[in-house]
Length: 224
Image 1 (cartoon, rainbow, N blue to C red):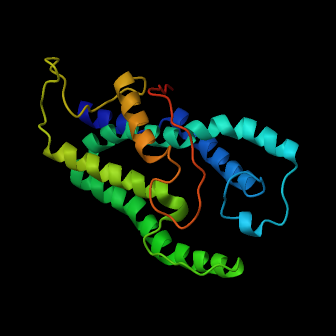
Image 2: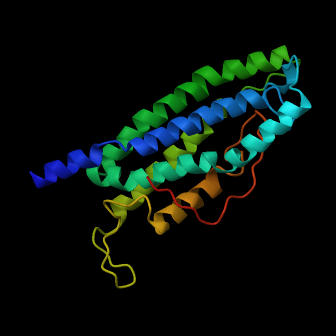
Image 3: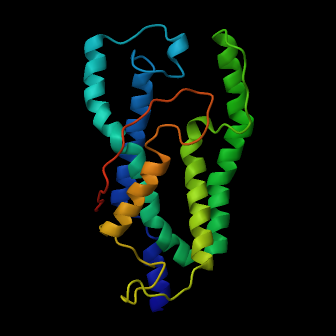
């Protein structure tokens, strides 16, 4: 009974993280919409932009969205990293990998192979460019591809690693079953993943131009 109650409690969602993700998604949507009409950098919609925002509006948008853009994708990776060990310990590597392939791999495949190529073709034709169609370019869902690779890689390491190992004589179990969101070590891991995958602005090749982003801080913490 104690084990069952623990599994049910582990499966419960954290409202604070759900609220944070809603806020981040809203910010990403707003930022992309703003960038389409702001004369800053290169953007997919720039070539067919009918009008541009007033310089004052662009300046205000940069002041608000600039700091937000430094952390938004890093927070997504950090949240996923914080929740992955607990989910993996509860489901096991096989079920966890299958779940990630279904929830991340299938949408990624459908978008990359079915939806994105014809959109790129039509946009290139509409803007007078030579159509360049790729069936390996994830486009806007690059985050899903990177997250899937990290998830499957972590599951593989979890499966092959010893179930009971000591770290520097502490006797701690690896991987941990219930990591705390406030743990500095997990925060640093999440930020490292963010730095390698999300902060460059173009973690995977794409025919669509993307804006770069500066390097994030060396460490951060997320608490609920």
